Image (cartoon, rainbow, N blue to C red; front, side, top):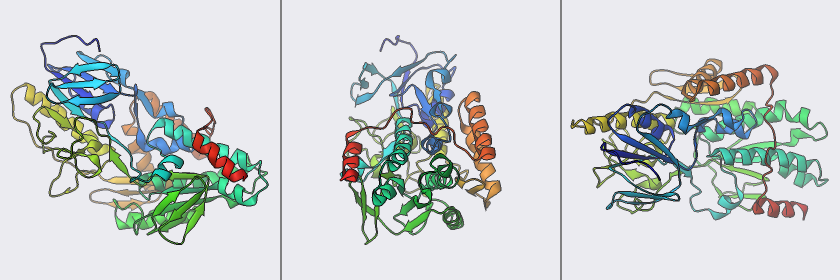
Length: 435
């Protein structure tokens, strides 16, 4: 990888997400050589991906170059690489661009969409965990409406204008709310020759309430907000299969749709060499102790979605969200400095700062440790928090201006088909509709 040798210990970080970036910042100006590996050259602000999918934001406003984050950091190196395997005996990381030795290894690979073994949904459904996936979804949504203009078959037209979102967590709730607002405020103007009133947004939740990680008050309020926007909320229903047009469930309820978005679960991104059963917990997460050390190792650490640190308060590990990853990255950074200085490490203590979700214009729910509130004020709090955690002054300004413009004009001008979404699955689906 053309990285010079150093008399300082080498820390290799795999992953430039919230945890990896927080850790890298903590190691600035320390007696260490730090190498950050990621398959993308940018940090992706995942909480706003749904706005890219629905035309509210362009992808460059929620992404930030990793090299720019590390500018001016001495002894820091970034390499655009896809990690293939880890040799824990030789202390070496193998990638598609070469291999590199480490003294200390930090795994911060994050999570990926979990289809729970359902190959049909994986092949024909849409995920929304990355910027390319969000752009694919945006193109598919717009292309379906363009195709709906061309068919005289009412059933096929309805299927093209119907949406099924599986998963009632924050991602599903926020996407459903955004699509409902598009249906109400944008589609009638963009497609005056279509009866867009027939478009349906269906949100399916396997459990008995939405936003199960939040309070029951937030769940009930979010459901009322969505129903007020015209979203069909289905609870206690599990989707069992999807063939590109028909959605089947474990009940007698079924749906015809050209767009199924899977937001029902995630699993950690594991790496060969650390994927044995003795290292892994539920969801492929790595077992770590209170110092973030992977079970069985002193020099391998894991943070963020990929790490499962069990405690009395969190028997299943910390939530797979941005805030735990950031806090873990900062904590590990401080501990690694203590390790360099020969001092004992301090156990990690997670400080729950609350959770929130937006449902649409002037509609959000916020659960803080000591107070819970919903509505307009919650919506402003949600916007402020997301702006604060965006990386880069330009991104904050661009997102803020877009939000103000969209609020005043009730518009989403990023509804562009920059790259048509064409894959074999879509071709087969279109043939089904024509038949």
